[in-house]
Length: 176
Length: 168
Image (cartoon, rainbow over all chains, first blue to last red; front, side, top):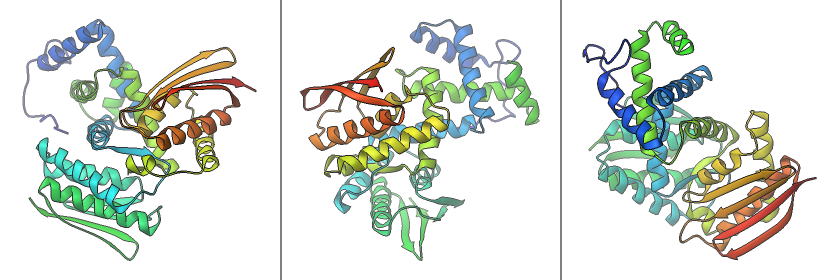
């Protein structure tokens, strides 16, 4: 998620909105058949509600970008588990290919892996390392998930060491 | 705008910076799926967070497509999910979003008419009978938790089903 740099002064169309953002909102509202005024208010209200419910807008943004990639790779949110090791590896290869094709940065690749792992346990992130504890799934599923992430990293052309050890998933990015 | 301003002040950030940041992210979210409305994105964000806390995880779609699941087990999962989401303040219509999250590429249409509920479910291309069975059983359990019972089911093709439920 690109962040705006505060030091960059941008031209404002009125007291609070930057011109380039205004133009993009205008295009979107035209496509949606809404007025800029209504669309702006709807968007700000939704984002504010997210923030008020303890869900930061940037987190939501990260989830949606990640979710779009995961969905395209054929990964879904499901209450059921199972499948074969081959199914998981294939999904990993698809995910890695997509990440490579989209020119994903190491940081965004780590975000995607964290997003997958957050569903199954508590994720501790330290720069280029992820430690997942408190796993809520059985060992067989953990092993398949680890294989999938390994396959994704390999297909994305990213060096990664991922292992399941003493009830923890340990993942380290070793470079591209 | 007062609420956005309050949040900005609480974070000790400038009002305009916060709003512009929100707008920029909001635009990217909407641009990533133009078919969804801003409100739908909001519902999705909350739903995804709630499903994760219920124990849903990211799995390859093939794990559902290829396996024959026990219908009663899946119904129980649906019922548990419905009960949990209702307790978290979601209304019944979130089912359409839920199925789309569980089965990527599916399209669910839901119409409520008094005590009757009509649903059409279209599975993605290349889906299997198992996937359709899984989805129908899950829906059955989910709606059961809201007190609905199935009164009619029509499967015209292997990837399309029309369902009718009534409040018991």
